[in-house]
Length: 58
Image 1 (spheres, rainbow, N blue to C red):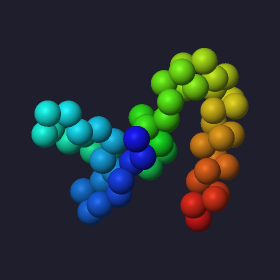
Image 2: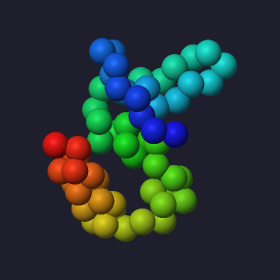
Image 3: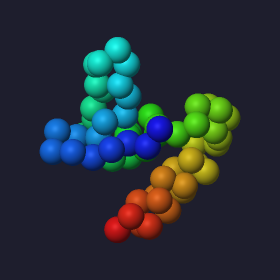
Image 4: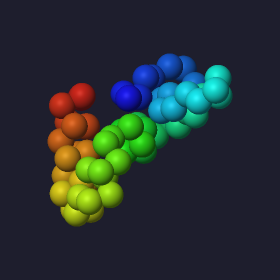
């Protein structure tokens, strides 16, 4: 699931009609990543991946 941005933040989950939204784009990216990748990845490598994706979006 990709986080979708709107004026209230990034929608990261919708379950039974309830939407979870966050305002921080980096947290939204982590919450929408594959859980296996997030849980098994070294935090330094994960940080680099997030930084690279931030640069690509800019």
